[in-house]
Image (cartoon, rainbow, N blue to C red; front, side):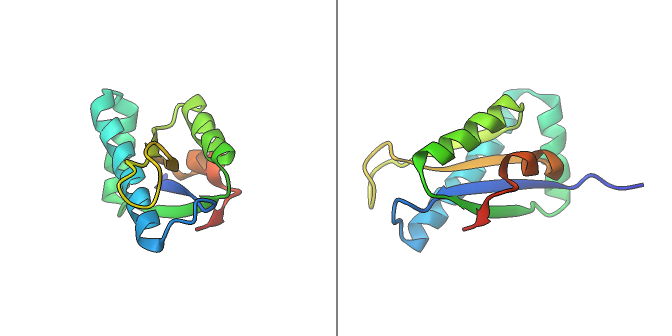
Length: 124
């Protein structure tokens, strides 16, 4: 019997020229945002996914896109598929203009579902 695996994919824009620390912070915002969304959603299935992901070690992968359009498309597809997803816009306090879209997190959810959305993307 196979055990379902869970993960979260975090997608960060590379076209913005963010420094490594800035990109890492945006990825963290996206990750936390998706978890908070699940906790506040009241959706039992998402809560089960979150708990399974937590128990399995909270697997994450950070991937890249090269445009705002690609980032928006990842988010749109995740929402359309019924997956938890967060969309991050920068506060504009350091390197970027306020409201600049920077990152998206998809999941935590079953890996097979996350891969349908992000499986073709390259590592950040």
